[in-house]
Image 1 (tube, one colour):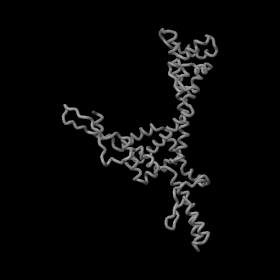
Image 2: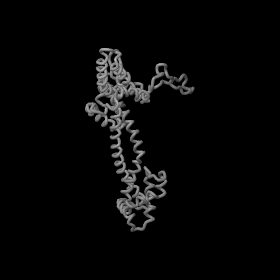
Image 3: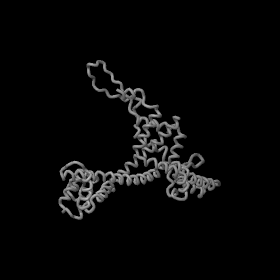
Image 4: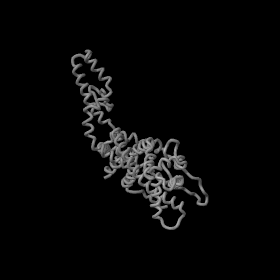
Amino acid sequence: MLVLLDIVIGVAFVYLLLALICTTANEWIAGARGLRAKTLQRGIGQLLGPLADEFYRHPLIATLSQPGERPSYIPAHIFSSAVLDLLGRHAEGAASAQHVRTGIAALKAKQTGPSADHAAHAAALEDWFTTAMDRVSGWYKRRLQLITIGVAVVVTLAVNADTLQIVGVLWRSPTERAAIAEQVRSGLLPPRPVAAQYPDVNVPVPPVNEQTSAEDEGVEGPTAAAPAVLGQIVGWSSDFKRLNQGVCATLQDERDRQCADAANAAPCQQALRRIATESRCSVEGADLVATDAAPGGAFFTSALVPVAAAHTFGWLLTIIAISLGAAFWFDTLNRVVNIRGSGPSPQEKKAAGA
């Protein structure tokens, strides 16, 4: 049971790290493309119709962003003030403002109680704007989800994060499984409470910081050690090594054939030079052993098809998982770690109840 929980912790930890990468990339892409501002502009266009361009030129709105850019956020009271000012500049029957006046009239009809006309207009506009922004938020989340899936595909393929392969590595390697579980526990669980010593309750004592013991010195935090641990369970190393085995077998057969009669012969020396310059193979005794060096252009030939076929289902599982977001996997890790540790310790329960 504990082995299965450690495997779940390891897989969720990998998902968390990859989801954090996706989140960072999403924010960068959204900022570079001005996704928030463009989505807001689309919503404002639907709200105000022909009045939208003039709205963005209004001083109250233009000062919310850099010159030449559109704001990514507009407070509701600023929106209502700017729109009311624009309506005051247009005649009652102006076609450009008729769309907005109709919306205000419909919202005012729902209000009860006497109120000043200007205040009623402002309240109606703010209500209209808030309702529209809920819809705009939905647009933004859907577009961001598509970007998330695209980034998840790129990240998954770049690091070869095959869920089935990750599970297999964790199942076969107790050392790596235990290392990841320990990293997660040390990074997510709260620190041990330190008992305070008060010789005299009437005499205050200065605060005492917990001293680092000799055992704790040199121990890296989970963030620093995470890339090293992650590199042991994801990546292309095993696939590159399998692909390089064919190259090494061919070179070894050629060497054995050319050097069978005379080691000083020109064909034999040529074969030895090829072996010496080949980074995909290493010499161990009389054998050539495949390394995990990148096979270069050979990877993007017919050899790619069986590799992709072997990883496709695992890739899909990873893409779906990391698309759920870093927050989801952080919460999941907390729950699983608590189950693995049989819940909070007695000291933590006592500290929480104090």
